[in-house]
Image (tube, rainbow, N blue to C red; front, side):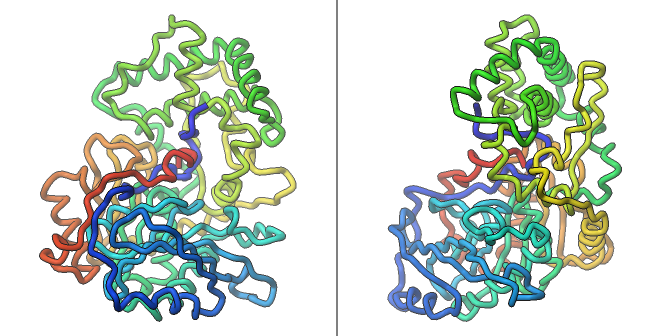
Length: 467
């Protein structure tokens, strides 16, 4: 089973930001910052542990910050939110990295952090373990509650970090950064949101159908993907036998989705989406022919969609995401006309299927309409970047006449991936970088001295489901 699993629903992003790790070089820790540990510990509700840093010039702190389960009624309980801090200097910019899921537990720097050469905090999204209230009051897993988590944390850390603040995130993390900016626009001085879907009207997903009819420049690739999807369904008994054997070997079960057959179909419906989300057109040559052996087809299916994605063990870490998708975020519903009449469970391709039945869910269509309206009419200092061949970019954010100092860019030929500033055409890359440095209060000369070479990916990329 592959680690990157679905193509349809995981704003789980999913995808993510490029970053720095390992042997990166930066300025040495300044003596003036030696007391930052004491300052962090002095913040009410904050516990701090310093870890061994793997980035030269940075100190690494694991923080736990006490947050209300319900910010409107803090007397109703608290939980500990995990935050990882890469500290360089208190007088440099701070980048708020919102993953939208768990926070990476190895050191890395997002693309904006590397460009401005600043500090970074990686914030774990509420209800992702271990940042989950006990008991889990699921109706508090909302975009406003999460934005207010970030607001309280920023307010606390600004007692130490007085410089400019930039927020960033990719996929669900880019959505999270956008929602935070909508509810608390003065918290940060600029936002770079990568590959952030904008499902403003959950009842109209025709944009995705149009996308799959035209994605890429090779019609043969699209045809081959669809043909292989149909072939998978035609070989249902053989594929089910292999999935069942793999699940038994791994000790995995299918209680949430109910049957391996349903799981199989959901992964087949993911297949085309997952290919374009995580792979490039140059990889079209690797698609097996429909005449290939069942073992070869199953191996490729597992690589692209993840044969065990919909086991209980595959779903459990991402239940907070699926809950939000089914209550506020919305979800894509492509029309799988090329798979009819081979499908039996098309109606199960939705978040309700992936959340345990004892967790109530009710969709609120007003949540995303509010966000979309705000971006078009009031967004300030925001950059949205998408990959041209990424399905999630079929419904992007758009800035409108009321937006100021904000723009949307598309990286040619790219997918739901990292390093998208670096992947932009030269003129656009220069503009995005200049905007980011201006928002961060960093001159070009300072950026050259402070920036860090990018040598690694965000370590969470290999652990998230597709969104």
